[in-house]
Length: 176
Image 1 (cartoon, rainbow, N blue to C red):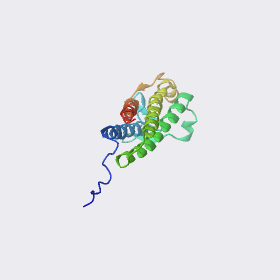
Image 2: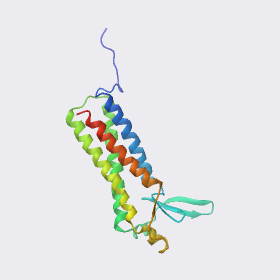
Image 3: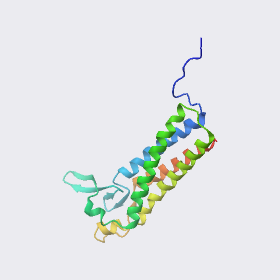
Image 4: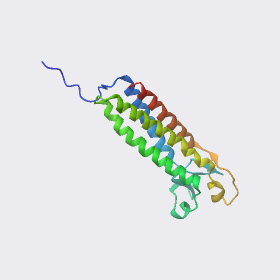
């Protein structure tokens, strides 16, 4: 009899490709959560996310997308953080989809060098979303009562995502 078909998930690139894939999955998940939640920074008891904000409602606070008239009031730091967050997560998702192919197909050293560079770039972009902490968004949206925003959960998740992207790049460097 001939050799049996092994199919996908045989990881022909070795064990580090498994570690890289798991690390990429976790970091991409944390990155997406960090920009999707409405608690990147906090002022009083309300949270401000990069793309959403907590609004007071009858039943308690509710997370809603930023309205266009509010987006016009964003300063440069907040706008930059939104762009960097979108770039980090878009590139992270694309790289994850490409990295999924390593479980089925053998790739060259050059491929892993490029992927390692891309995940390093994702990590840099993800950590740069913390530029939002230097924004005057809390002062603008609390009518000057709060001068600085407080670090909150989603900002922490952004740091975890960044570290995960760097860890993925590290694991990929073993495949060169």
